[in-house]
Amino acid sequence: MKINIAAAALCATVSVMSSPVRGFSFNDIHFWMGEGTNRCAVALDFGGESLAWGYRWNGSCTNLLEVVNRIVDQDHRLVMGCQGMTSAYADLYFFGYDKDDGAASWDKDTGSTSSVNALWGLEDRKSFSQWWVLYGPMQGPSFPTTPQYSSWLAANSIVPVDGNWFVFSIGSPEYDADWNESPAVLRTPTAAESPYGWRVVDSNVSTDEDDFDDVENVLGRPTAYMVGQWGGPVSPYNAAWKEGELLTLQGEDDFVVIEFDHDVVDDPNNPFGLDFIVFGNAFGVGTTDAYYSQNMGPNGISFTGSGTPEEALVEVSQDGRTWYAFNDGPHGDDFAPTLGFVYDDVAPDTALYSGNRWWGKMADACYPVDPSLSWASLQGLTLAEVAKRYNGSAGGTGFDIGKLNLPTNAQGRKWFRYVRISGMESETPNDDGDYFTSPEVDAVADVAPVSGYKQWVLANFSWADAWKTNLTAATVIAPNGLPNGLNCVYGLKPTDTVAVTVAFKVEAFVPGETEHVITMRSPAEFTTAPKGLVVKEAASLGSGWSAVAPTLQSSERQGDGTWLNTFTVPAGCGAFFKLALDVQ
Image 1 (cartoon, rainbow, N blue to C red):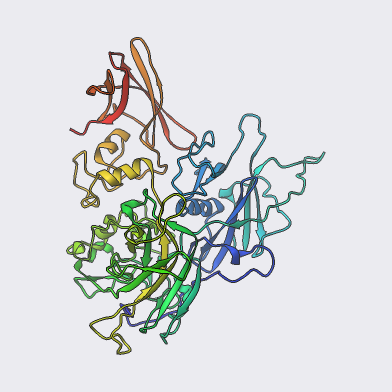
Image 2: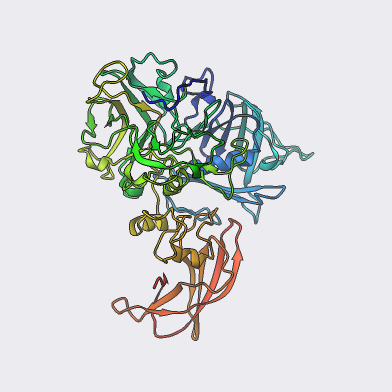
């Protein structure tokens, strides 16, 4: 068992896997966001189906809009349209949920989506036949049977407290003669699908370490923050180690079997071809004995290029009986060590802890680290540089089930539902004198697929230098994850982040006798002539492409935060056109 400091303290981590006493309750929610002892639940009723998520926090909660934002940010299947996020009244006008693969494209203006099974609800702003109605706060933990109307309070003006339920329902409420809303009937929700392990179905644990033998420690999201003395944000130098956060597999016969609430598939759109991630508590060895705490800056710590893995054998199964093993690796509780939060010294989350100047939003536990990285690749890097190189990922060891001889589903994709993790034979004895590794397990996660532009970037650019800030070549990935050339087109600095992710695409093309009009959507305003953006034309698809310089006519902000940009190009002999980046 790895512990990088000889201390122990109680960590308040809540597991919610027991059966409900009556109806649907907090205990039936699969997908919980955040960490802490306070809990609230949010349900989205799409008119025919209702789904529920949970949110945890310590201290006081900012407001309901912040809760919903964090749910949308962490659930890759869920999208939201919101206007006035920074004003006194936040208008949540659109929700969409992709029930298929989590990589659908959406049009928040029309509600259209590439996923035929998606759930979505869009406010009707012309005839007002339907809109999103908010019910709550209502007291839980059981799902409320009597709705409490929000009296038209905006989500950013409601402060949740422990035990609250909130329901967003698409529809049109009924009113009596005095314009009082008639009682509504709230549809009992089902649990929104979780990308993390949600149930332990079998185990054998022999460790006698207090609170490291609880199998439910492996459920849900990997640990991001440790409370109490010697706690702070989890990082590649400060691994999760406190009681209640991990499961230790100490003996030769120790194992744990974790079930997902859905089939994990070998999706061709998964980043780097990886399908699931196993989180342990391996950490990188630093060049100094100074222990990293939340008051010590991550720029003052560098790595030697070695780590503290305790390799675990990882196997998968479709039925919990027939197992397929990664005998030759990769192995659990190895590279890459967990990162709790994205490094952001420009806009750190000051609510995370007093004095935080470096850590921003929670890192993405469903997005893997580039598998070309290794312990050796950390040598000489500071903790801040390592965090940048993770590119938003929470780390963990990524696995590709395409390498296993698994049966396929009806779509021809390999899949599994169960993960079994156990120790392995070792050349050195563990704490009990057994020649077996004693790995820790924190969590397992289903990798979220990406589509469109992001998938193209992953396939065509090297991420080896993405964390650096002084590379200006147009084809190099900048620290914000976009190629420098595209940042130039978008009018962004290399470190600017984009709140709304949109594809680089043409919205409309109107041909003319002397000029053609092209409309495209972008995440930022074109304030100057778009360097690097060219329109290429060809007389036929079999001939070569020639570049035409576009002229910017207008750049208008849209309701979802994106910008609609209009260009003109001179009409010539071209019959086919495409937008391109001139990176020469």
